[in-house]
Length: 248
Image 1 (cartoon, rainbow, N blue to C red):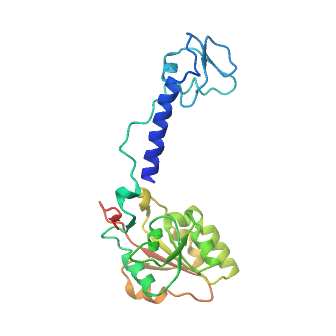
Image 2 (spheres, one colour; image 1 turned 120 degrees about the horizontal axis):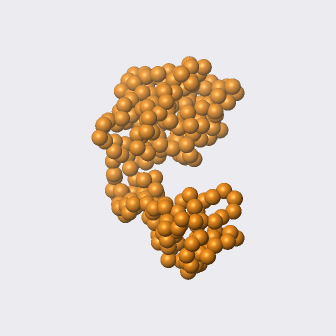
Image 3 (cartoon, helix red, strand yellow; image 1 turned 90 degrees about the vertical axis):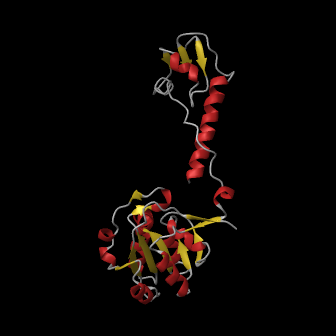
């Protein structure tokens, strides 16, 4: 995502330069007219605004103002070359000191086929784990797993984003599903933004809660039964660590 944001900002900067040099605009002095509005100067490329517009005191446009309010808008600061897959390797794996590696090892040992969610749980689809069979988007793993593999792996952020809706439906219909929640109290894959504690929102599900290094509980609880079950695995992301790059 970081690479995509950088690429988008680079393109937006190019659009600023195009707008400033565009022959579609006609610069004839004050005031500037936008669209069908009257003005000596005619401005056609309003977003992003041409740099010349910042020097105009009068900007005439119909309806809600846009060009007048954004005439001083500056292009994004130049960034490094957007990160590409070839820069970071063909896939990534967990941080070197990630506490959830024990969970991932136990899921693989149990031979479970898992629907992974967006976030760190999607790394269950990459080596050395490779137990994830699909990933559709943030919060989607529970609903998809309920109609397929019966095992969903999801982060606390994704659960409260939209996954909890499907979990409520699963419990109401008493479907066989094991929902594994990785609770690290943040959105680790996008910059460790803080996440709300999901446990108050899961009290009705009577979840089993254990630490990420509790091998005994993990081994006992990583099974699918005839009824829905929720396992919340808690761990803290190590400070200063990032997802490891693995080159092929």
